[in-house]
Amino acid sequence: MSAAKQGDRKGSGEWREFFWNPRTHELLGRTAASWGLILLFYLVFYLFLAGMFMLTMYIMLLTLDDYKPTWQDRLATPGMMIRPKGNQLELTYSLTQTKSWEGFVQNLDSFLTPYNDTQQVQMNDDCIPDQYFIQEDSGEVRNNPKRSCQFNRSMLEECSGFPDRSYGYSQGQPCVLIKLNRVIGMLPGKDGQSPLVTCAAKREDSDKMGPLAYYPPNGTFNLMYYPYYGKKAQVNYTQPLVAVKFLNASLNTDIDVECKITSNTLAPGSERDKFAGRVSFKLRIDNK
Image 1 (tube, rainbow, N blue to C red):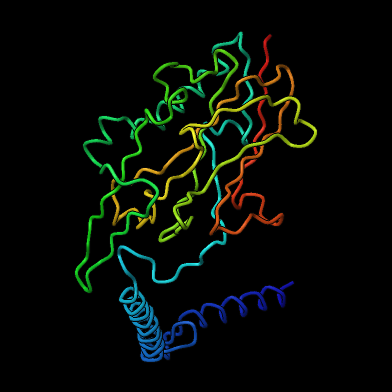
Image 2: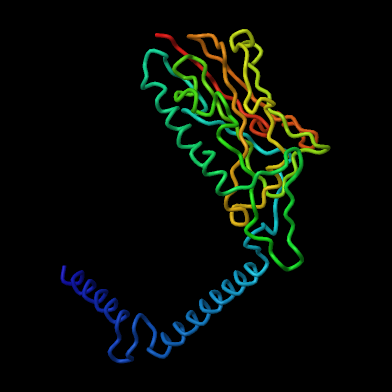
Protein backbone atom coordinates (compact mmCIF):
# COMPACT_ATOMS: atom_id res chain seq x y z
CA MET A 1 0.00 0.00 0.00
CA SER A 2 2.85 2.38 0.90
CA ALA A 3 4.58 1.64 -2.41
CA ALA A 4 1.38 2.46 -4.29
CA LYS A 5 1.04 5.78 -2.52
CA GLN A 6 4.65 6.64 -3.29
CA GLY A 7 4.02 5.84 -6.98
CA ASP A 8 0.98 8.14 -7.07
CA ARG A 9 2.97 10.95 -5.44
CA LYS A 10 5.78 10.46 -7.92
CA GLY A 11 3.38 10.59 -10.89
CA SER A 12 1.68 13.69 -9.53
CA GLY A 13 5.02 15.36 -8.98
CA GLU A 14 6.12 14.57 -12.54
CA TRP A 15 2.93 16.10 -13.92
CA ARG A 16 3.36 19.27 -11.87
CA GLU A 17 6.96 19.50 -12.95
CA PHE A 18 5.94 19.11 -16.61
CA PHE A 19 3.41 21.89 -16.27
CA TRP A 20 5.84 24.19 -14.53
CA ASN A 21 9.49 23.38 -13.85
CA PRO A 22 10.86 25.89 -11.30
CA ARG A 23 14.44 24.77 -11.90
CA THR A 24 14.49 25.33 -15.69
CA HIS A 25 11.61 27.84 -15.78
CA GLU A 26 9.85 25.76 -18.43
CA LEU A 27 6.07 25.85 -18.99
CA LEU A 28 4.70 22.67 -20.57
CA GLY A 29 8.20 21.68 -21.55
CA ARG A 30 9.15 24.98 -23.22
CA THR A 31 11.00 28.04 -22.07
CA ALA A 32 9.61 31.55 -22.44
CA ALA A 33 11.87 32.16 -25.44
CA SER A 34 10.60 28.98 -27.13
CA TRP A 35 6.97 29.95 -26.53
CA GLY A 36 7.67 33.44 -27.82
CA LEU A 37 9.15 32.12 -31.07
CA ILE A 38 6.17 29.80 -31.62
CA LEU A 39 3.65 32.57 -31.00
CA LEU A 40 5.60 34.92 -33.26
CA PHE A 41 5.64 32.29 -36.04
CA TYR A 42 1.88 31.73 -35.90
CA LEU A 43 1.21 35.45 -35.65
CA VAL A 44 3.22 36.10 -38.81
CA PHE A 45 1.71 33.05 -40.53
CA TYR A 46 -1.92 34.05 -39.90
CA LEU A 47 -1.23 37.69 -40.72
CA PHE A 48 0.19 36.49 -44.04
CA LEU A 49 -2.92 34.38 -44.72
CA ALA A 50 -5.19 37.30 -43.81
CA GLY A 51 -3.21 39.60 -46.07
CA MET A 52 -3.42 37.14 -48.98
CA PHE A 53 -7.17 36.81 -48.46
CA MET A 54 -7.66 40.58 -48.37
CA LEU A 55 -5.50 41.06 -51.47
CA THR A 56 -7.45 38.38 -53.34
CA MET A 57 -10.78 39.95 -52.35
CA TYR A 58 -9.53 43.40 -53.36
CA ILE A 59 -8.43 42.18 -56.79
CA MET A 60 -11.72 40.34 -57.27
CA LEU A 61 -13.76 43.43 -56.30
CA LEU A 62 -11.82 45.47 -58.88
CA THR A 63 -13.23 43.18 -61.58
CA LEU A 64 -16.85 43.66 -60.47
CA ASP A 65 -19.27 46.19 -61.87
CA ASP A 66 -21.81 47.79 -59.53
CA TYR A 67 -24.43 47.84 -62.27
CA LYS A 68 -23.79 44.76 -64.40
CA PRO A 69 -22.56 41.26 -63.45
CA THR A 70 -19.09 40.50 -64.78
CA TRP A 71 -19.95 36.84 -65.21
CA GLN A 72 -23.45 35.67 -65.97
CA ASP A 73 -24.67 32.15 -66.62
CA ARG A 74 -27.48 32.88 -69.03
CA LEU A 75 -30.40 30.53 -68.69
CA ALA A 76 -31.72 29.25 -72.00
CA THR A 77 -35.20 30.10 -70.75
CA PRO A 78 -36.04 32.06 -67.58
CA GLY A 79 -38.46 30.70 -65.02
CA MET A 80 -42.00 31.88 -64.40
CA MET A 81 -43.98 32.51 -61.22
CA ILE A 82 -47.58 33.24 -60.27
CA ARG A 83 -49.32 35.57 -57.85
CA PRO A 84 -50.92 34.77 -55.52
CA LYS A 85 -48.61 31.83 -54.86
CA GLY A 86 -50.79 30.04 -52.35
CA ASN A 87 -49.40 27.08 -50.43
CA GLN A 88 -46.90 25.22 -52.62
CA LEU A 89 -48.45 26.68 -55.80
CA GLU A 90 -51.92 25.48 -54.82
CA LEU A 91 -54.87 27.85 -55.04
CA THR A 92 -57.63 26.18 -53.06
CA TYR A 93 -60.59 28.02 -51.58
CA SER A 94 -64.32 27.88 -50.94
CA LEU A 95 -66.87 30.31 -52.37
CA THR A 96 -68.90 30.17 -49.17
CA GLN A 97 -65.96 30.86 -46.85
CA THR A 98 -64.68 34.39 -47.34
CA LYS A 99 -61.64 33.80 -45.17
CA SER A 100 -60.44 31.06 -47.53
CA TRP A 101 -59.82 33.57 -50.35
CA GLU A 102 -59.28 36.86 -48.50
CA GLY A 103 -55.56 36.06 -48.19
CA PHE A 104 -55.28 35.72 -51.99
CA VAL A 105 -56.95 39.10 -52.48
CA GLN A 106 -54.67 40.80 -49.96
CA ASN A 107 -51.63 39.22 -51.62
CA LEU A 108 -52.68 40.59 -55.00
CA ASP A 109 -53.46 44.04 -53.57
CA SER A 110 -50.01 44.26 -52.02
CA PHE A 111 -48.26 42.95 -55.13
CA LEU A 112 -50.04 45.36 -57.48
CA THR A 113 -49.56 48.51 -55.40
CA PRO A 114 -46.38 49.60 -57.30
CA TYR A 115 -48.38 49.19 -60.53
CA ASN A 116 -50.98 51.83 -59.63
CA ASP A 117 -51.48 54.15 -62.59
CA THR A 118 -50.69 57.35 -60.66
CA GLN A 119 -47.42 55.90 -59.40
CA GLN A 120 -46.39 54.59 -62.81
CA VAL A 121 -47.08 57.95 -64.50
CA GLN A 122 -44.86 59.71 -61.96
CA MET A 123 -41.96 57.26 -62.12
CA ASN A 124 -41.86 55.74 -65.60
CA ASP A 125 -42.05 56.64 -69.28
CA ASP A 126 -44.82 56.12 -71.80
CA CYS A 127 -42.83 54.00 -74.26
CA ILE A 128 -43.38 52.93 -77.85
CA PRO A 129 -44.77 49.36 -77.84
CA ASP A 130 -43.40 46.36 -79.74
CA GLN A 131 -39.79 47.54 -79.75
CA TYR A 132 -36.93 47.29 -77.27
CA PHE A 133 -36.18 50.22 -74.97
CA ILE A 134 -32.41 50.26 -75.49
CA GLN A 135 -30.39 52.55 -73.20
CA GLU A 136 -26.72 51.95 -73.86
CA ASP A 137 -23.87 53.64 -72.02
CA SER A 138 -21.68 56.14 -73.88
CA GLY A 139 -18.20 54.67 -73.52
CA GLU A 140 -17.09 55.18 -69.93
CA VAL A 141 -20.03 57.51 -69.24
CA ARG A 142 -22.79 55.67 -67.42
CA ASN A 143 -26.34 56.21 -68.58
CA ASN A 144 -27.68 55.70 -65.06
CA PRO A 145 -30.21 55.57 -63.62
CA LYS A 146 -31.92 54.10 -66.62
CA ARG A 147 -35.55 54.82 -67.32
CA SER A 148 -38.35 52.26 -67.30
CA CYS A 149 -41.59 51.86 -69.20
CA GLN A 150 -44.98 52.18 -67.59
CA PHE A 151 -46.94 49.06 -66.82
CA ASN A 152 -50.21 50.42 -65.52
CA ARG A 153 -52.40 48.35 -63.27
CA SER A 154 -55.42 49.28 -65.37
CA MET A 155 -53.90 47.28 -68.25
CA LEU A 156 -54.96 44.13 -66.37
CA GLU A 157 -58.60 45.22 -66.81
CA GLU A 158 -60.86 42.62 -65.14
CA CYS A 159 -57.89 41.39 -63.09
CA SER A 160 -56.69 44.82 -61.96
CA GLY A 161 -58.79 44.79 -58.79
CA PHE A 162 -60.63 47.96 -59.85
CA PRO A 163 -63.91 46.64 -61.29
CA ASP A 164 -63.92 43.74 -58.83
CA ARG A 165 -62.05 44.12 -55.54
CA SER A 166 -62.03 40.33 -55.08
CA TYR A 167 -60.26 39.68 -58.43
CA GLY A 168 -63.04 37.25 -59.32
CA TYR A 169 -62.43 34.95 -56.35
CA SER A 170 -65.83 35.64 -54.81
CA GLN A 171 -67.61 34.67 -58.07
CA GLY A 172 -65.58 31.54 -58.80
CA GLN A 173 -63.72 33.30 -61.64
CA PRO A 174 -60.28 33.82 -60.05
CA CYS A 175 -57.46 35.83 -61.61
CA VAL A 176 -53.88 34.57 -61.54
CA LEU A 177 -50.98 36.88 -62.38
CA ILE A 178 -47.97 35.51 -64.25
CA LYS A 179 -44.53 37.07 -64.37
CA LEU A 180 -41.33 36.12 -66.14
CA ASN A 181 -38.22 36.07 -63.96
CA ARG A 182 -35.81 38.95 -64.50
CA VAL A 183 -32.63 38.29 -66.50
CA ILE A 184 -30.25 41.18 -67.14
CA GLY A 185 -29.83 41.92 -70.83
CA MET A 186 -32.37 39.35 -72.02
CA LEU A 187 -34.05 40.01 -75.37
CA PRO A 188 -37.08 37.70 -75.41
CA GLY A 189 -38.32 38.36 -78.94
CA LYS A 190 -37.45 39.63 -82.40
CA ASP A 191 -39.14 41.09 -85.46
CA GLY A 192 -41.57 42.93 -83.21
CA GLN A 193 -43.01 39.70 -81.81
CA SER A 194 -43.37 39.73 -78.03
CA PRO A 195 -43.28 36.54 -75.95
CA LEU A 196 -46.74 35.06 -75.46
CA VAL A 197 -48.24 33.32 -72.41
CA THR A 198 -50.60 30.40 -72.90
CA CYS A 199 -52.22 28.31 -70.17
CA ALA A 200 -53.82 24.90 -70.42
CA ALA A 201 -54.96 22.12 -68.16
CA LYS A 202 -53.11 18.85 -67.95
CA ARG A 203 -54.53 16.23 -70.29
CA GLU A 204 -56.75 14.54 -67.71
CA ASP A 205 -58.17 17.92 -66.59
CA SER A 206 -58.76 19.46 -70.02
CA ASP A 207 -62.56 19.36 -69.68
CA LYS A 208 -62.52 20.94 -66.20
CA MET A 209 -60.69 24.22 -66.80
CA GLY A 210 -63.15 26.00 -69.06
CA PRO A 211 -62.43 29.13 -71.13
CA LEU A 212 -59.77 31.67 -70.17
CA ALA A 213 -59.36 35.41 -70.60
CA TYR A 214 -55.93 37.05 -70.80
CA TYR A 215 -55.01 40.60 -69.78
CA PRO A 216 -53.53 42.52 -71.48
CA PRO A 217 -55.83 41.00 -74.10
CA ASN A 218 -53.00 39.62 -76.23
CA GLY A 219 -51.40 37.86 -73.23
CA THR A 220 -47.89 39.06 -74.07
CA PHE A 221 -44.90 40.57 -72.28
CA ASN A 222 -44.38 43.53 -74.59
CA LEU A 223 -40.85 44.08 -75.95
CA MET A 224 -40.74 47.64 -74.64
CA TYR A 225 -40.08 46.32 -71.11
CA TYR A 226 -36.78 44.80 -72.25
CA PRO A 227 -33.87 44.63 -71.86
CA TYR A 228 -33.69 44.72 -68.09
CA TYR A 229 -30.54 46.49 -66.83
CA GLY A 230 -30.49 45.41 -63.19
CA LYS A 231 -31.97 46.58 -59.92
CA LYS A 232 -29.32 49.23 -59.25
CA ALA A 233 -29.19 50.68 -62.76
CA GLN A 234 -32.96 50.60 -63.34
CA VAL A 235 -34.37 51.42 -59.94
CA ASN A 236 -37.98 52.04 -61.01
CA TYR A 237 -38.35 48.94 -63.15
CA THR A 238 -41.66 47.12 -62.79
CA GLN A 239 -41.98 43.74 -64.44
CA PRO A 240 -44.67 43.28 -67.08
CA LEU A 241 -47.47 40.94 -66.08
CA VAL A 242 -50.01 38.73 -67.75
CA ALA A 243 -53.27 38.00 -65.93
CA VAL A 244 -55.25 34.84 -66.58
CA LYS A 245 -58.92 34.76 -65.58
CA PHE A 246 -60.70 31.42 -65.25
CA LEU A 247 -64.21 32.09 -66.56
CA ASN A 248 -65.95 28.77 -65.92
CA ALA A 249 -63.72 26.39 -63.98
CA SER A 250 -65.35 23.21 -62.66
CA LEU A 251 -66.18 23.25 -58.96
CA ASN A 252 -65.24 20.77 -56.22
CA THR A 253 -62.40 19.22 -58.22
CA ASP A 254 -58.65 19.65 -58.62
CA ILE A 255 -57.46 21.26 -61.85
CA ASP A 256 -53.77 21.02 -62.73
CA VAL A 257 -52.83 24.06 -64.83
CA GLU A 258 -49.62 24.73 -66.73
CA CYS A 259 -48.72 28.12 -68.22
CA LYS A 260 -45.91 28.42 -70.77
CA ILE A 261 -43.99 31.18 -72.50
CA THR A 262 -43.76 31.09 -76.29
CA SER A 263 -41.04 33.16 -77.93
CA ASN A 264 -39.11 33.22 -81.19
CA THR A 265 -35.81 33.74 -79.32
CA LEU A 266 -36.19 31.75 -76.09
CA ALA A 267 -35.63 28.02 -76.20
CA PRO A 268 -38.63 25.91 -75.13
CA GLY A 269 -38.37 24.56 -71.60
CA SER A 270 -36.98 21.07 -71.19
CA GLU A 271 -38.48 18.25 -69.16
CA ARG A 272 -35.36 18.30 -66.96
CA ASP A 273 -36.26 21.72 -65.60
CA LYS A 274 -39.99 21.98 -64.96
CA PHE A 275 -39.71 25.70 -64.10
CA ALA A 276 -37.87 26.80 -67.26
CA GLY A 277 -40.31 28.84 -69.31
CA ARG A 278 -43.32 27.43 -67.50
CA VAL A 279 -45.13 27.28 -64.20
CA SER A 280 -47.57 24.66 -62.96
CA PHE A 281 -50.13 25.10 -60.22
CA LYS A 282 -53.25 23.47 -58.87
CA LEU A 283 -56.61 25.23 -58.75
CA ARG A 284 -59.58 24.03 -56.72
CA ILE A 285 -62.79 25.97 -56.16
CA ASP A 286 -65.31 24.52 -53.73
CA ASN A 287 -68.89 25.73 -53.40
CA LYS A 288 -69.50 24.30 -49.95
